[in-house]
Amino acid sequence: MAGGCGYVSGFLPLFKKRVDYGKEKPEWKKFFINLDQYISAAIFIVIMALLFLQVVSRYLFHHSFTWTEELSVLLFVWMTYMGVSSAVTYRKNLRIDALLDVVPFRVKKALLIISDLIFIAFNIYLIFPFLRLIESIGTSRTAILGIPKAITYWLIPFILVITSIKLLIDIHKLVHEDEKRLGTSRPSIDLEAMEREYMERKTKKEA
Image (cartoon, rainbow, N blue to C red; front, top):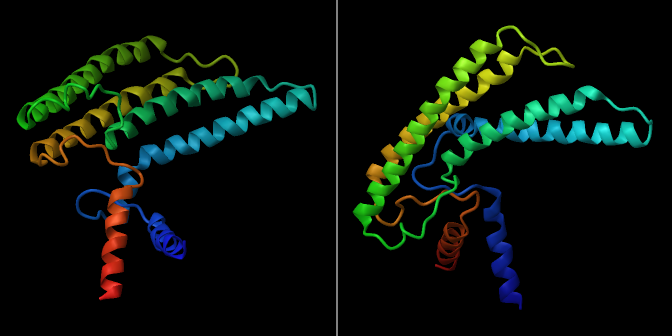
């Protein structure tokens, strides 16, 4: 029992830092890579605050703020597209892995690259309809807050471009990845890596 407690107490501090594949990146680079994720989290907090305000004002003060719903819908759309970009960063976008797990290494690499290329083509295809939509909107504004609708839609083509750039970076990584790491997603907490690090620290301490 005491040995188990010692193992846990030694293992838990490793949760304080993030274990990632490849070389350790500078802090500014990590922040830039995860910027869309931070913005999505901030937007989510704002949406929750707006919904909380709406519930409290309606049931306690019998007054409803009409602008909170409009702003929440707008922010939710932005958060969704930010989430797409963030998912690509960590290879968390939806895909079916059943076929990839049974094909040879070179075929798997080719399929993953083709998948990213199709994703890029789809993003580029979506950009042009959005640009035409923004042009047709002109100077119209939202009904309650009066926010220019063009501003609300401009973020979507921008995120599609950022997502495509991240996919190109992912293709470059796929080309150079070995069979063990090919196409693997990057977990927020790599338990196996942390356990290996703990065992190495334990071995050095006992030695």
